[in-house]
Image 1 (cartoon, rainbow, N blue to C red):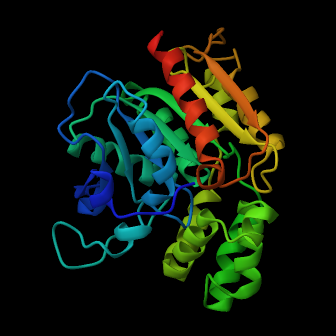
Image 2 (image 1 turned 45 degrees about the vertical axis):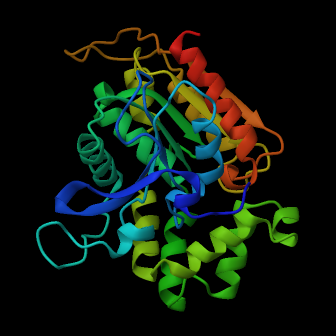
Length: 316
């Protein structure tokens, strides 16, 4: 991963955009005028971090050619969105309610960016948001990228909210150390890798309130049964799943369950009768080495997988 650098050095535009409930966030956009015919890529970051988590991958996607428009943004309660006021009054934005709330935020953001359909890629928490978005707004989803995420919550997730609340801090030493060990390799932590420094800085910035709200939101993740019943994300949404072999949070055990649900051929018609649904292309990759915060530690390999899948979806 490259060091984090100001956007003026990268040539990307950052601006305030609308999300649901009259609230706002900050968007990074490589091609704000929407020039070219390539379908835009939207990148959704992990819990506790912000849009800059994607910097290395973002750069690699932009320079790949084809004039692709790449967008990343801060989720509600994160980064600059955490302190953004609403567009209608001086009150701070509403806290996140659930994953569907975040999916609605993304729909409003796409409208504000004049994007009808996009390739939606999310890592971890962002992968959960991407799933709910694709399920609720399939007509806005050209393809879906699910990176180091899951289709079902784990009991430990809600305790990450309560532990921070009890400690009054997200950076309580044992909680911080445990979080970094789940996210990164031992070598990256030992060497103080730029991605580790970035993540640590984000954790020092996020409030206990927003951290806890996000983990309670993530604890509502439950798409596996729905995907099995409707035949994955359907016949029109290709899916890329990228798992890290060394991921200590949502590793192969969790990602394979999600893959199997995405490839289910079971389904029901509009009258509730069983029918066979043939899913669109579902591609599953396990990266070795590959950790939970893959975009920060294995950015080059992840960008390569995204670009290869884009070429497949484009029919090239």
